[in-house]
Length: 273
Image (cartoon, rainbow, N blue to C red; front, side, top):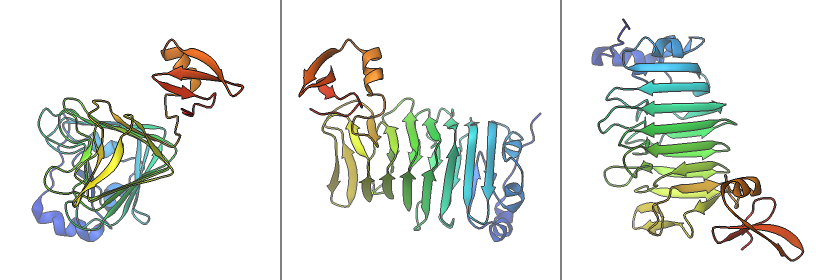
C-alpha cells in the first residue's frame, strides 16, 4: 500500500518559509526537505496515483529542477507539475528523454503555470521533454513567462487540439529560443516570440496578434505546429524523406536534391523551394 502525502492549508505558511519558490510535482511540494533528497522520485512513488522513474533533483539555491531520463505519470485530478504565483524564477534542466504524463480522464493540465505574477519558467538542456494529457492542456500558460531554450519539447493532448494555451482570457508570454517544439495549438497568449527557430509546419503558418491576444495561425490546417531550429525541420532530413516516401531526385543548379510534399530539400535537409 502506498503512503498518501497530504498537503494541508495550515502548513502552507511554514513550507513557504522554507522554499525559495513553489514547485509541486505529482502532488509533492518541493520544499527544502524534499529538495535534499538524492532523487525526488523516491518521494513521488510514495503517492497513490503517481509513478516515477529516472532521476529528479531540485537545487534550492539556483531554483533548478533537473529531469534526467525521468518519467512521471499522474492518474489524479492534479497537474503533473505546477508552479504557483508566488514562486520565483525556475529552470527545468533536461538530460536525456523525459516524460510528464497525466492519464486522468477529466479536465486537468499536465503543466500549470501561475495565473498571476511575473514568474519566469525556463525549459532548457540537451535533452527532450514530452508533456501529455488525456483531454486538457499539456501546458496551461495562464500567466508569467515561459521560455523554451536550446532544447526539444513535445506537448500533446490525446483527445483535443490543445497545446500551449490559456482557458480564460489572455495568458502569459511564450519565448522560443533556438529550440524545437511540436504541439497541436498555441493560442490566447499575451506574447509569442521566436528567436533563431522557424515554424516549418503547417505550411504558411504564422504568429498573429489580435488585440491583446497572440496565437499561431495554422491557416486551417489540422497538422501539429512544428517549430524547428532548422528551416528544413526535424524529421525532414534527406535520410528521413527517402525512408518515408517515394521521392523524385533531381538536379537543380548542379546539385542533387530531393522533392517531397511539394518542397525541395538540399542534402542538408533545408527547404530551397
